[in-house]
Image (cartoon, rainbow, N blue to C red; front, top):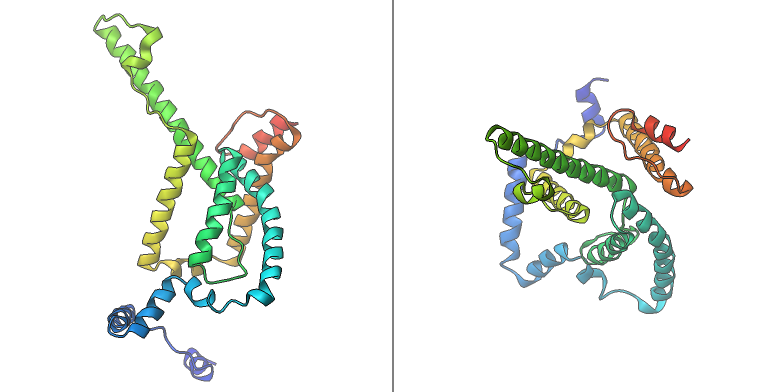
Length: 251
């Protein structure tokens, strides 16, 4: 069986062209503005809570939903605290993430079976990125101090090393602010990617690649939290051989 016979047997339909699809979406938007009923459906598509909340059966579903919510909340509390520590911020920020994320998804979400909250891999990657940014700021500050002292030495200017920070300004930023910056930047990038419709790139990621990535990330997550579980002080490491260094320091 060749490709043409396969398509004919299984009634394959090629995806619509992007230009025609965009044109249809624009026409749908203008069509919604001409009729109140269509406009209401258009608004509901952005706020799904307006469609299911008026039809919600409180008598039959409320007790079960409260029980399910309490169960999921009990799971989320220790999980969010652990993921906040994994990111490198205070545990209370993990609770904020789990609480406000659920409220937003209740308004804009489309599935009633999804539990929204922190994620181990994202927390780990955010923490690593922020530590690298903070280390880069420290290196730049030290390099600026060295350049300042070197220039003062060549110009025969006396340098007061006790007040060196007054002469060389350092970027004052906390780890929490770096986490907020990385999170905001990641969200903007994801919005741009959604507008450009680059989700097709995920089809090039094989199951073996995704499985290997998840397994490697799980090992990193465990390695980062072992020292806290055993209450052992371990020096922060990064780069190639990080897991080997952490294992050596713990043992």
